[in-house]
Amino acid sequence: MRRIMTAAVLGLLCVGGAANARGEGPEGIIKGRQAAMMLSGVAMGAMKSAIDAGQPPASHRFNTRALARWAHAVPGMFPAGTGAEVGVQTNARAEIWSDRPGFEEKAAAYAAAADRLAELAAGEDAAAFAAQWTVVRSSCQSCHDVYKAG
Image (cartoon, rainbow, N blue to C red):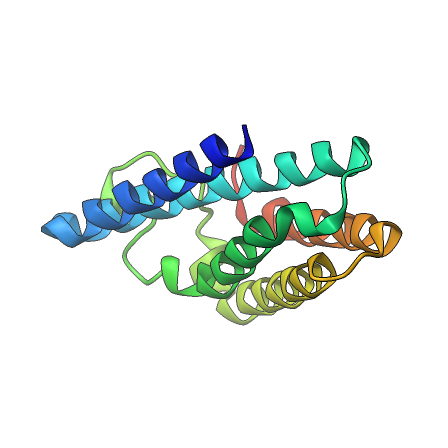
C-alpha cells in the first residue's frame, strides 16, 4: 500500500511539473503547487496513520524527505502573477504577495519543522517523531490560517 501511495505521489508531482514545463505559465505553476499541496496532505495523513498504528519512524523516511523538499520549495511556487488574477481557481490569498516577508517566515518555519521530522525518521524515537509530526502540522495550519482562503 505504501508503495502505491508513493508511486501516486511521484506521478502527481510529475504531472504538476509537466504542466508547467509545457509552457502553461502561471496556470501551470498554480496547478503544480495545488497538486503538491494535496500530495503533502497525503504524506502527512500516511505518517499519522503510521504513528497511530505504532509503526517505526523509519517507515516514512521517503515521505519525510519528500515533504522537507516540498517545504523548501513552497516560497518559489508562489511567484508574483500567480494569484487570482490568472483566472484559475486558487485558494491563495493576496496576502501571500502583499505580506511576502510574513509568508516567507511561515514557510521557513515549515521547512525547518519538516527538516527535523526527516531527521527523526532516520532514528527510532517514535515519541519524538510523533511530537514533531504535530509541530509540522501546526506550522502548516499557521500558514493556511493567514494565507489560504476557504
